Image 1 (cartoon, rainbow, N blue to C red):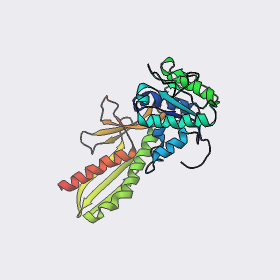
Image 2: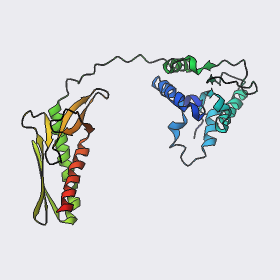
Image 3: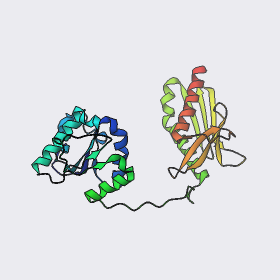
Image 4: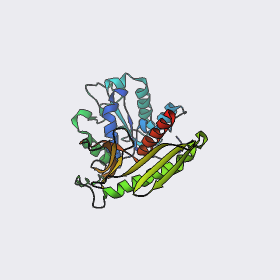
Length: 283
C-alpha cells in the first residue's frame, strides 16, 4: 500500500467464521457509495507482499477513517484479527479516542475491558438486517443514501430484434471461421466459406470433401438458426434474459420444448469447429 491518503471510509476486520455475514454487508455498503476496505478485494494487490504490514497500515489509521471490528468469540481467539484490532486500538489511543473504532458485536461475546472500554458504544449484528446496517454505516461516514432504484418490467425493450441478433451471430461465426481457417493448412485442409443469409463452410483435405457445414434460418419461421450438421440437429434462438436485461443466444435440440443453454456466437463456432476436427480425424 502506497500513499498516505485516507482512501477508505471504513476498514472491516473479522474472523473467518463471520465472512459469510460480513461480505453481504460490505457489498451493500459499497452499493450505497461507502468506500470499504475488505481483504478479499485486495487479493491481487497484496500478491507477493507481506500483507500483514499493509493490513496494519490500514487498520492503524493510515488509509481508513474508521475501523470496524466484528467482535466474536472466534475473533478474540484468532491471532490475525487480534493483530488488526491492536493496530486499530493503538491508533485510537494516538488520537485520544476520536470515534475511530466502530465495534460490532457478533453473538454472545464478552470483550475484556482491557481491549475495549465499556464506555464505547457498539452495535449488535443480529439486531439489524444487512440493508439496515449498511444504511446506518453510510449515515455514520457521511454518505448520502442513494435513492431506491425503480422497478423495471421483466420485458424485452422495444429495440430487441431476435432476427437481427441471430444474423449478427451468424456473421460472427463466419468471421471466426475466416480468421481460423488457415490454422489447419499445415494438415492439408482447405476451407471455402460463404456468409449470407446462411453460413456455408466446405472443408476439403487433399482435394477430397470432408464436411459441408450449413447454418441458416429455419425455413418455417425464420426466427431461429438451424445447425443440422451437429448431432441431433440443433437450433439457436435469440431470447431476452430478464435478469440481465439483455439479449442472449440459447442452444437447444431442434423443436425441443426446453429453452436450452445460454451460449455465445464463439461457443457455437467452437462446437462446429470441433465437429470438423472430429470428421478430419475419422477421414
